[in-house]
Image 1: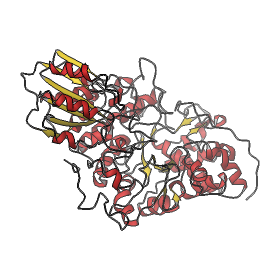
Image 2 (image 1 turned 45 degrees about the horizontal axis):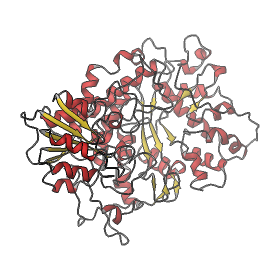
Image 3 (image 1 turned 180 degrees about the vertical axis):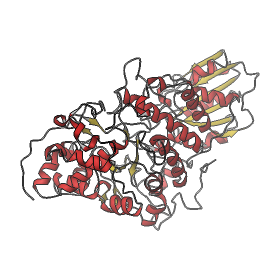
Image 4 (image 1 turned 30 degrees about the vertical axis):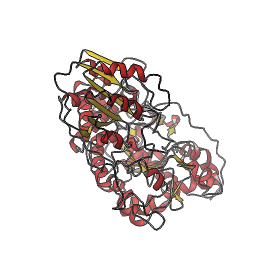
Length: 609
């Protein structure tokens, strides 16, 4: 291969997805990319043929500068919409007015508890409509890096809230409807609504546990477990639901970083599952290509890392490593230009499918405006999704609360929660209804007292909380865990109620008044609450979104019937001492006879309880 000298343009990282190319009067008008009668592959091929090598390489990162000299604008490939249009490089929320908010649905773990595929389709349809509105308002992109469909295998995982649950069949059913709603149909023609990206392929469910960090973690997975548990949701995405994009993960599987794994990206994904359309493409997780070299130490040089990822089938680098090092990798003959062209053609063919290179007049999706964001219907749907996802874990007959209840004391660090109900990967919500506010709309005599923090030993607030509860007809305790306990980049070391919350609940239970405990966040061991006769009822609400407070009160008062079921197994606290997070096996082994999948393992509450 001929060695060339390239002047590198470092891709900007601060812009959002912005203007569309002008296929009416712009420089590209005479290029085949603007010929609406040609197929997406032919059009994208004609566009990429105009790029110099330097321009090709500069557009291999998520913050692509485009090619101004030919009229191709900059484009940000990275936008987020896990449970509504969300803060991300490709989304720009205004400080006020139009495009300052989007509907904030419950986290997937809560919507997964609804086991309602029609609900998921409706939610995804709203999210994609609002995403298009943001795009048309120069405030958002067309590619959304959602959904997260890694099975929620271990309760300690910091990102479990992002998934619909632990069961691959349930995840597959959920994600099918989600992709149809996001992309505008199973095989939407002539335009896709937005591009869905199924992540994180594959075997990813560790953040940072006892020194095992996701960036360099090597997941040892048997071929049977890989086939039967870790891969089925991605098979659904690729083979059956025709997702336009897949994200490879930080971790390695059996020694090979997934973004450099030709077996996963080519043999399984493209060949075995038939995911071979020229407008379907793979992105890395952010800086995962960098980690091939720096964290996994899989290659000797940065140039080998970017070339290995490209050759294996990773088409986009979420980061700057490929733009920085593919030039030198080319000079070292580590990849062919045809391979680089293929990656670019796939992505720009995808943009063709989105109507990016079409005149806007005849595109219904280009006519969507901010008037279709946070409509009355979408607000009602957000409330419905929260209500359907709330699960009853215990009830001695005290729920729904009697109409004789006139005064209510809300207690707990999340009794006045607002943004905490959204969880992570959230956007700016149009409003946030806290449990305290919602209760005040039901009972005029309502008090709200924190009593204790989510996670510290300070009990100075106990007396005030107990005093307010002692004069109420009923007590509602709202807390559990939130993103200060579980989050991306941070796994839990235990699955107990944090801080002094259980002690406060015990003191409230001793008052012998109707006591409802609402458990927020993902799972914790609530066995002591189940066995405590002073705790009359126990609800799990997860992360219920913008109308979470109203949904909780509608359930407690009986205005809405309970429908949710647990999307994950509830384990006892000693689980963390018996099963290491690094044990990816789904079956007991000689080294770990207490694996949670052992039929003799005692569970607290099973999935679908």
